[in-house]
Length: 314
Image (cartoon, rainbow, N blue to C red; front, side, top):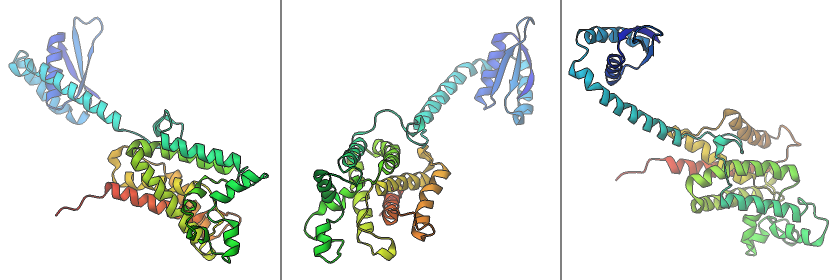
């Protein structure tokens, strides 16, 4: 910011800075202390300083010219329009951060996201986190698993045995089974983080359809794939859904940054890196539902692309 000069009298100074605003020269006006109503004009953009000096020379020749008098209402309209634009932009801006931070949408958890969380907690408690010590907990775990132990034995190891008997709910219900409190805590944290954003973004009915796809496809991929592909019917957790929600937000906002949402790069590295590590087998102790994660990511990304892809014209 550079000083342009000074003008005697507040009304004259206001007319001049208003005129400069109408020709896209932004200024700041300051009263000089104890200097008989003298006002100092500062130009914010130094590249426009010379142009502003030329305008000041013209103004000093005839400070009451009509273009300067008429500039005041025009400048007021411009300022009002810019303030409205600023407020609209502020409404549109969201930033993806971990849950419970204001930029990741705060407030109450939307209904379906809350329902998924509560069901996961309830199943975890009843089944003692997949290690039941009572008959009821064991029965619940058996009914929610991808395939029942009895069907596995009778079918000579067919992971689709229970599904073939018409128990189609098993393509969904493994998402509520968590092995340990830490497993549930991590998945629940990310579910709330992404779920509250996406559910508010697209509405609960569409969110419900997305959750259905993000449960069924990853579960079938994980449960029916052979072991050499990292498949296993003995799995559980809502992380496939979480990966899908992550993929949806990541791809959609990458295609269209105007949504004002961005996912921090370290989060991208964490999500994708876990899949790479798991599928590579570099760390044998890292036993995750890698195919469910991969399937969820792919399905969520497909939803994100479909939401932003331009519609074909005839």
